[in-house]
Length: 73
Image: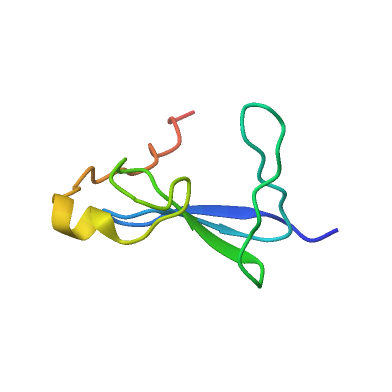
C-alpha cells in the first residue's frame, strides 16, 4: 500500500497525496478529483469545502504554520 502524505502549504491548504477516502460526519464518501492529490481548505473561506478553491489568497489567510523542531535529548 502506498503512503499518504499531508503537507501544510505555506499560507494555503493541506495538500494530501496518496490513496485516501474522505468521508463526512455521517460516513458519506466525498467524490474525489482524479489522481492521488487533493487540497483541503484550512482557511474556512472556500466555496467548495472541504476542498480548497484558493479563497485563502483573497481572504489574506496567513497562519505561518510550522512543525516544532524535535526536542533536544
